[in-house]
Length: 189
Image (cartoon, rainbow, N blue to C red):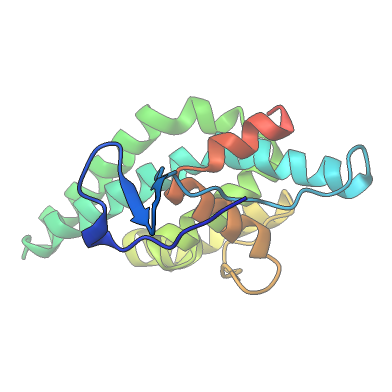
């Protein structure tokens, strides 16, 4: 197999080629290929990884929507000076969120809910507890933290992309690069 290193100025024809001595070598520019190591098929870790990918596929769009809405809300709230108007705007956003996302989020499993909390923390930049505390006050944040703890989650736990959330961070990078669907196809998710 013969490989040639091609410089950008040499590739100006279609299909591109390079003349090397008396030989003409065609150059095909391919899309990058990403390889994600997957645990051994049918092992316990493979099943856990497949479940993580399935859950991520289901909840990551909600985390992206949360980021989008938080950015929009922050922009609008920064322009409001009156405390009363600010609280009315926050209440309106809360009603809109409940009307748009209450039913789909109620259908999530516990593990999907915990993953969603982590992804919201990653996307928004602060834990769900502090988002609630900033917008609705300490009592409501305390109340929702109690509900979350009852179901085995923690609103105060930060996203740790170098620690326990390392695999989730890899999935986020794959999603951003556009290779996540290939992984889903590989795992049959």
